[in-house]
Length: 175
Image 1 (cartoon, rainbow, N blue to C red):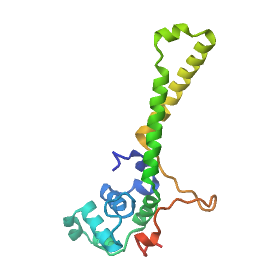
Image 2 (image 1 turned 135 degrees about the vertical axis):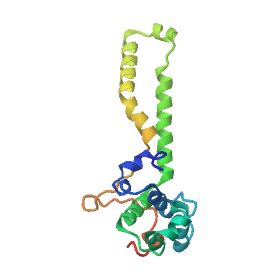
Image 3 (image 1 turned 30 degrees about the vertical axis):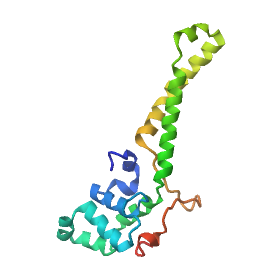
């Protein structure tokens, strides 16, 4: 997941999770998870099997505890953050960034015949555009490659929060 979504490495709640733990969190709380519509108990069990494997579950008590709803705080926190993600909006934003890149690219390519016909003022404007595009290009490429991270705002500073599911939809134990 961290290869496909490198911005996840910047989210504090995901940094210390193993790859399997991050997959588990994604399966139980991301709205694009193939098992998101299952009831809680079935979703937890399926997520654990998919993320950790059945052999690991039978061998590790902490995984059996998670299936029973006894999640460690770091998993609970990660579930809350993952539930706040809106993958559809993030994908649309990525497409917009790619479209912007394509538009800038098409505007940068001016045939020599047209450059020759430009007056001094037009050449200056075009040169300014090229320089500005080159300056902004690394940011745009970063957005396209790195995606869009989600930041939860501190409730004391701002009342705006991002949430896609009610926490009771995920687990009563997290509340």
